[in-house]
Length: 189
Length: 359
Image (cartoon, rainbow over all chains, first blue to last red; front, side, top):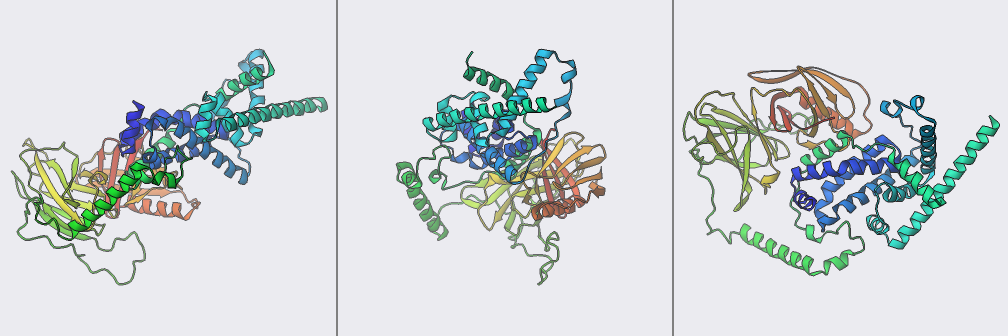
């Protein structure tokens, strides 16, 4: 089904392209958001990726590789976006209202602990380089195997394994550093 | 559970947090971009690098059998084109619809000589050519079409020979190319015997065409109108966007409409203007500033008035130019034509092509 849509979109069928975009957009946006940690920049990355898909689809020889190709595009666009963001200074994101609705007041202690744990991992992810976040997102969020990650990133499997190892190590170090900072703040309070 | 498993579990849980639905604005803008940039035939496509095969060098690709065959085919095609242009195939029969006018239509000449000095504002068209063609009618009164060519590429226009009855759905225009004459396209649209006076506007891009026709009620059988247009260069019929505008076009009441092109210019991909209709009010963004206006329609067409706009300076010159063109074109809109999820606002300064999206 998707193969047929890809082939038709490549020849300029706009309905087929719309179907493809509607199928892929949610996942691509979710990946971009988890790499960039910013809604608006993820939105920009998604739009740029979809435009690139339209422009370059005729060059994709094997329609079965469409999904992997879209992952490659969104990862590259997001990493480039993140590098521009770093050069342009920090970005302050305003959370949508529903992100804070129904929060801590109605939660049980176990739920609060789980949220605190997720927050700590999120802060750790924030400290990683964008390409480290990207490879962790591909493995842990998208659920790709090592070989698939290597294919998406266009690197040998051994290199992908090495990058994953260092990304996980960096995350662990970032979480430990975050824990030490909180301990210090609690002692001085 | 070891430390590795614990980190994996925590990471899985943390990454589940966050949005999982793409914003419609990005999707709509990308679709509008695709609509504004229809796929062109790329004779060198086979030679271009596969984006998922980065390891293969261009040299290696060029040596593969398929690209070699493609290159040979290109050389052969170029030779055939040269032979054809030189009259080598002139003895072949070329299917050209009969000319309805008593004398050949001359090449369009501007009705007013263009000023020798460049115009101060590029928004003011330099007297586009207008030519009139009598349309062949099977039944009903004589029909004519006045053609305003803003592209400057039209070299000949004549009526085709319609079949009996209506062959295309009402409100649509069928565009077909002629294999023997790549610079010629045939527009076919249906109507009633009483719609006698038509107008065709060809936008500066040479691909966006709007046929305006008078409102015409009746229970007569539908008829076809056929118009044959020849340009000074080959035209891809599949890239032509032709639509019908009637004087009583209905104003959309719902949805968000993203501009794909303004006066023949593609909109900026990430900051395309958009419009939302709410009864007789419309609001939207130029991609830089927000605006509001009033829209009214009657038998003579559509008018957009009381236009107000915020005054924020645009970030880039391209954005500023897009805003200027969009607002000037919007102010001069006279007709509105809707076809499915596409809307065309047409006026003296060109057309605004919009694609519906939901947000």
